[in-house]
Amino acid sequence: MNERRLVIIFSIFYILLFIGHIKAQEVEEPDAGVPVVTTSLGKIQGKALTTLHGKEIYAYRGIRYAKAPEGFLRFKAPVPVEPWNDTLNAYSDSLVCPQTGALQMVMSEDCLKLNVFTKNISARLPVMVYIHGGANVLGSGHSLYEAGPHYLLDHEVVMVAFNYRLGALGFLSTQTEEYPGNYGYLDQVLALQWVRDHISNFGGDPESVTIFGMSAGSMAISLHLASPLSKGLFHKAILMSGSASNHFHIDNVYWTRKLAKELSCPQYNPADMVECLREISWKTIVNKCSEWEPYSFINMKWNYEVDGKFLPKHPSQIFKEGIYNKVPMIVGFAKNELDYSVYHQENNSRLLHDLSVSFDLYAPEIFLYEPEPAGVASHKSRRLWNFYMGRHSNEINATNIENFGEIFSDAILGHGIHRLVNLVYRDTPVYYYRMDYVGRRSLYVDNNGTARGIGHADDLQYIMPGLWYGPQFAENDPDVFMVDRLTQLWTTFATTGHPSAHELPNWPALNDTKLSVLYNDKEPSFQGMPYVERYELWDDMFPIERNSCAHN
Image 1 (cartoon, rainbow, N blue to C red):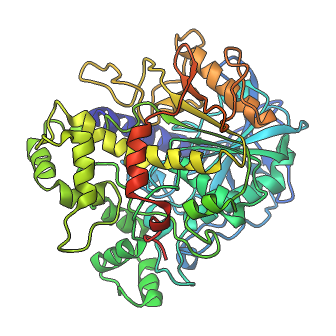
Image 2: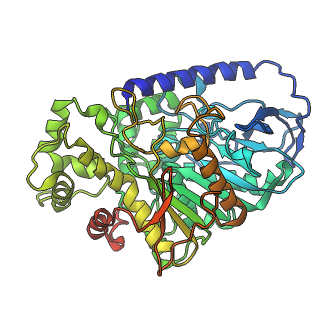
Image 3: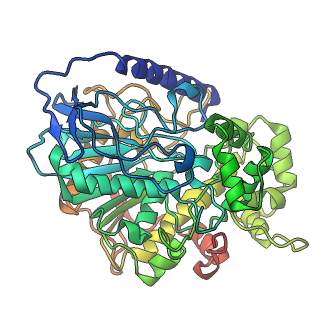
């Protein structure tokens, strides 16, 4: 990803978000014809929007689903919102949850709010609930930046997107009953409960809810498949480039104590530690955590906990035992995923030299697996180097840096998706795809601005518009055919449980007789399982029985 482009995108987004928030404080007149929605919590007034193909829809944005997790409510499970008396003017998106970003003035801990987009509040349409990604430290359900309704609402669905707590504020853990972690995931559960209880007032069917997400949002969906707390809150799932059925070794307690130490708080008494951290501003906490990733590699610092409530066991074990929430699924990933994510360091010869010479030392941290005990040779790291970089290669350089990126693709995303698919396809319908189409716009471009391939999150731009990719597609854009195809596949799946589109009337679910995977290029095709040899390496290195050591 071009770093300068990323900075520009973030800056534009936060400036627009700030302007929008200021304008939202002004008195606005309701749009004529937009109905007031009456719920058991109170009345809600929205605004009108127009979809890609010119249909009018109603947007109800910034609806609180939980109390602000501030003060004593910080590092606790979310508390449901209480009813209000006046009509809520839900005209604009809320502030986003605290995270690394250019303008902290558009962030707030009072961020547990959601957006609902509908076209007929008297209908009973399928509901699609989006869970955003961002490595558990970035992102939002903001309709301008990432989660716009303008493509999906050309079809007969209701869409919901929401914010949840991120970083230390969402996942700090002492692995005790008082502070078990998983607060961001519990926010998601509460948002899904809100949908169950209130979406019928917006024209949605609470008995036909599809959750879908990208990256860490997709990983979250795999956790809701595994969690007893999420049972019955959704009926179908779409996982785009992420699953928790992986080898990740992320020690939340380590990062919690590191944060406490660097902010001069007690480290070992959980009550004293949390009491101290509650007195510190969220800005200080976010800024401190941001210092821990100087090279901008893909590296999650905060993850789920097997807490006995949200997660009774490691998700891979839950899937293996068949005790998950069995619903139809679409599962897939992009052909190149994170292959190009390291190109922004290709001219950093000092860093590449250090990574090459000390690969055995760095690999467990950047590829998120448990290091070998002290004094023991790192067989896992050597196997990875020999397989991806070549047994006779001794350095990472501009000619083989894409091979290094492939390790990221498989470690962070690909293998977990592959494992999930193989664990569940015999129990429930699974529609597996690889996104191969390379459009005009990509997050991963060369120095001439040309897409290198189809990278991580590039397919999301065809599902929802967002400033991350630039302006919304025009109706005559040459890539709009992919918008129409993917949104038709996703919404027919949300409606019937069977994805179909004009060019793809018969997408078969996986079965033991034929493992047909959709390779979604300009001309779609069905082929066998992708990257089998690569994923077999990870299966062998990280068998399920041994991949749960990171959690207590």
